[in-house]
Length: 290
Ligand SMILES: [Zn+2]
Image (cartoon, rainbow, N blue to C red; front, side, top):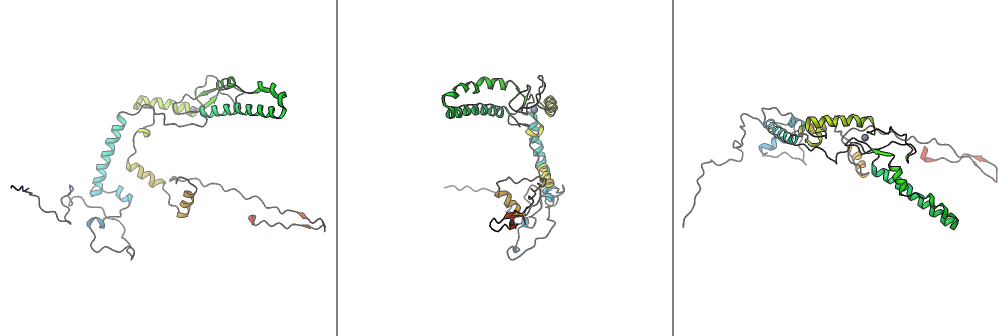
């Protein structure tokens, strides 16, 4: 029977000895928190804290702005390099076009279809009501029921915006279903913004090989996202957050303009006359308007 022994030249690692890390501890320090922890009975101080525990609880800003001489600063440099490499790879072969990216969709072709078809359906219902009420005398009004010829004629009055990321339909002929003022028959865009945006998209294609904005296919760096949050994040009392959650609203991080409250209608007392005595009284005191 043979025994295999593995010879290891490495010294035994002590738990507190962290010199085996790839970073030289004499060269790079670990970042310290700028505040002291307020210990209590619920949160007692550990008698023998580990080395990392002492340096825990750093703020996000402190971590992000860590100087290069610290371990965190060095880690940040590595992360940034990694993210830049990733961004370069993403920029290398960008998607030329993406149907999922839409900038404007206020009145799409589906909306137009719904508008026209619902008017056709209403014409059928109206005809049926006439038949129910007036019987055979109403059969002659069948010619008023809108058919698919009406749909085709109405659809011809509308045109889709030529800008790639706009799904809007605009009208080029008067007397249309929405009673909108028509644009010129040779118009290509629904609005001036779309015309400019289309020109910019073509420029982007010539420069980057993609009609999409760069932010669509290049991931933001963690640093960029952190800065955005830092600039826009707002602390709110818990009851406000609970109320938003109860309403089923997503919690927006961006500052919102305060919504105007509806003014309460002016309270006017109701005049009542007692018919038997002829006495006039103003008895109504609505507590809602107090
Ligand atoms: Zn448009």
